Length: 374
Ligand SMILES: *Cc1c(COP(=O)(O)O)cnc(C)c1O
Image 1 (tube, rainbow, N blue to C red):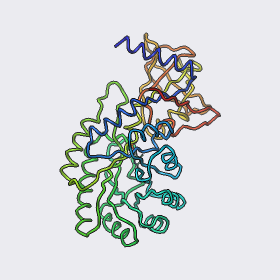
Image 2: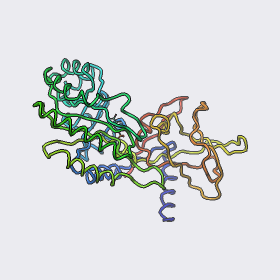
Image 3: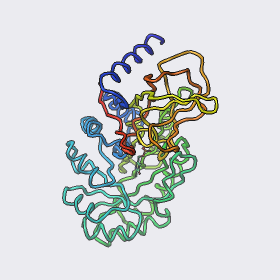
């Protein structure tokens, strides 16, 4: 154990020396492994990688070569995915409210599957993407998920069938429904309640002779961030598989939009201590990445990370801060940290999702360089 840790630390040091910091190392084999793990855990579910989690072109290429499909939210994301070699039939435009320009561009490029959650969006789709297949997004419980997504999106389940009928009457092709239980969802019941509601709507739609082919179970599949946590996925996947088989016959196609699960575990962020201070008797370490950069997930994604160090020795309560001139840019307070020196490396694992994706260059601080590794 000790020997492999040391080998990993030597590797991080070497890469940081060669490529500079902050550096986001993204492992192709872990990306492929997560895709594989998703398919093994959820054999009936087709993964559509949610590009917003990490839209780096090399990440998308690995997904294309692994024959994943894609969830895009904008014309730019759609074009990235098409340029990387995905087929239009492998894309779902899963932002429920889209500019008409994006709808037109998607239709022109042959993307035909869209989600919606209002009658107004159907008007836009019918006009700019006539004949498109549409999934109605329903509001489902987001209890206990770290990132709440039902505040902004989803129709009341009671209105879902009538909206699918409306779509049909407008010349669109109703195809089923979608939901999202909230990101980093460790509460299994969210998925199960959502699937049960979906099954009721599927039955209702079929009774009313509305085609119902697809249930899109969204994203939210959780990952592990801290050594002391258990990895929640396998247990979740086993129960979900049971419920899917119980509720939906083989004629229903089940798709999902995993983002965090596929890309989160694939990346390690390597930072460097650029300065130290003592404030009120406590040590402060200033790093070369922070809340405006790759750690922006602590703000927007409400994520917490485990900070790791190459040094051992006695620890003391210390503060980690980012490099910008904003007092808001404090990464962690009261961390037990061995005493570090300027120039030391600090790293975070499992940080591939919602990290560089939402990083800015505030204060002229460049975002972390992304380096693909085997
Ligand atoms: C963000 C998002 C996803 C991905 O969610 P994860 O929690 O990263 O799996 C999937 N679908 C939609 C519609 C989203 O907004």
